[in-house]
Image (cartoon, rainbow, N blue to C red; front, side):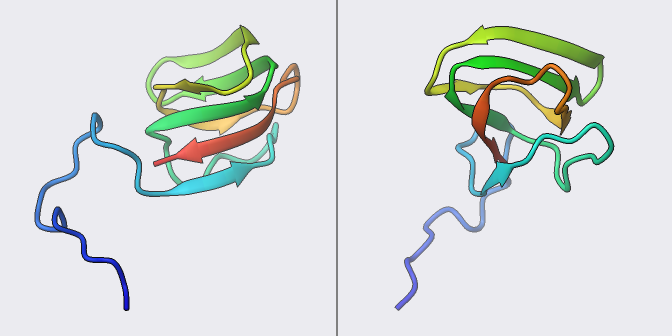
Length: 89
């Protein structure tokens, strides 16, 4: 029997918890299917992303186990050294 969702009638806000998680393979040529609500970084490193509205930025020295509350459309393979990256939406 499927779990009951008591919040299914509520409008989803960007500050709400994520309802979807996808393991990401960084790419210099392919955008994500969905803009993220946040990004989880499982292994320490740097991560180059394209932000939803403001262009490309390099986050450096991200500690393992960090969830960044950022909305991104791409995670680049060039200069990204972090791994086990999960897009949350």
